[in-house]
Picture 1 (tube, rainbow, N blue to C red):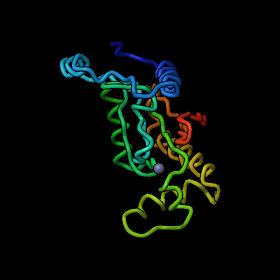
Picture 2: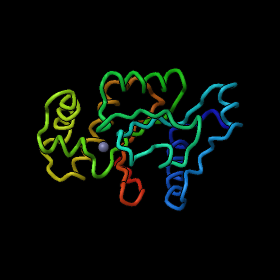
Picture 3: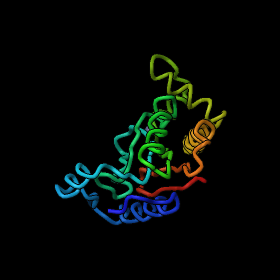
Picture 4: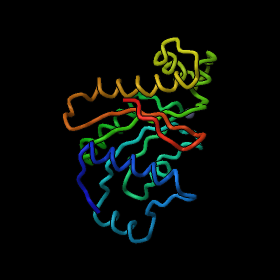
Length: 184
Ligand SMILES: [Zn+2]
């Protein structure tokens, strides 16, 4: 198993993985006993950090045809970025050498929908207030999900900019057909 990737190689692997996902009926990622033992003995070398929504229809490992040891996954409703997410991303970049972070929004996102409807009560409000800032008055749900992913990616770049070899991109996952729309 290759242990060092550039950001460009990592992005290419994700694109190829999504192309396989569009053709397959089941996740072809390697979750075998062999890979479990290999990653247990030699540690993990994931090539991408993916910040995805918690939505049960957006499974990062499945979307990119990945198995054990490939994706450092961060899932939170609305794929928002706060200090705990930044800490996870920083850890992946500094200690695991992950060269690429993807902020992956999606269509029909309940968190974005709640933000557009102005629901800001309770702990959900921590998320929706953040999305309201991100979408800057956009009312179309898909456009708002795009803006949110772009804005959260920009926030990562702004805080963790000192990591020269650490690329951040954003994307929109289309739950209706399984495709990825790369945004930047
Ligand atoms: Zn969502």
